[in-house]
Length: 301
Length: 177
Image 1 (cartoon, helix red, strand yellow):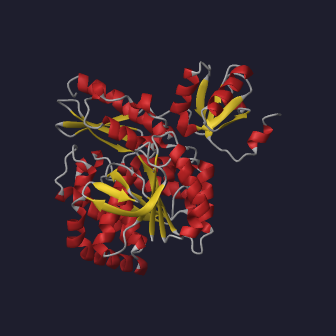
Image 2 (cartoon, helix red, strand yellow):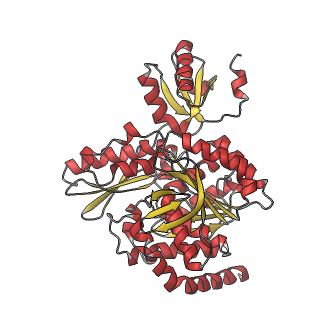
Image 3 (cartoon, each protein chain N blue to C red):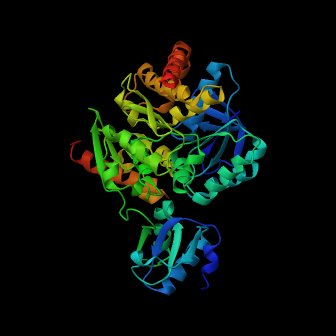
């Protein structure tokens, strides 16, 4: 089971857990209706589209309203700390929530109390909290963009707003150097998907792939196009794909969805997500096969 | 040593509010606690000391909300700083021209607006929970009528979005240049 945890931009949404159903531009979870906008809603929606394509059960979502005050986030942390071992998900994605170092550490401890520790993915502020708390290595997958990679590479920073200027101003040519620094200071999960003009996939300190096609620059402007990668990767891992194949397929699907949706800087994320069923139906088997072949080449080299 | 117990409660926030004197530090603690903002009294390390030898540790991410709350309660403070690393917030702003639209990036936040109308087209990046909220509030509004992130947001992500917003407004008022 894939469990996705995060916040929604509604003050009145109580802690809500249930199967997530995507209908058009709206998510339905445990009786609540949540618009498919930037943030965890986009992540959940992309996971729904991916699992539906694979004929797998819909993801479960644990969402709470939070306008940034952190009140909803604290309910979410508390619920996870007390219930994660019982929920026993196969894959957990932690996403938009107020980063609180001590609480994130307790969530990771709770995950370890499950019969089998889930495959742990963190993106957005959940990733900030895991890095700042010094427990990045307890996670299986992080999905930073370039500015967030600079944050992971800065051993002192507790939020991307305080990254050293020389690291922030790095261009994509320095990604290998930043990836190496993030692993060296223990601030990286086992696998990284660095989202950008050229997506980089790294594992155990080594870059294993770069993907740049199709090149759709407007995707960077659209709120939610990083969230969709994390949602698809989580869905693919929960469906049995290894994390490198999942990462490769997710970034290729995201780029191709941008192409199919003919995106501009004004496109909304649900317009990208609504092309995912077609993208995955047309390409998933081929991409998974190619990624699998690359994995075999990698293990032989 | 009365604040020593606070050191053992497991709270680690990463940010320090510095005060001129002990009375203000105590007032700050009361104001934040009354509003449910997690904090504890600590002795600031010598390299960060700017006023008295009592400070409040806060969750650094909540810096904008803490500043706003202390100001509204008329509690004077000297500064809010990270306990380690760079003391300065990122000032760097990067601009991408998409032709009819401009994307302004500040830290981990990006704001894209229409050059002609100034309408906010998209907000991307970030990870704190006020960003999807601000996204919903600002989208499809002209920059000069959109709510200012610094006034509605609670976190450092909203502060970075505010930097992008201020720069966007300036670019738009200068005709998109």
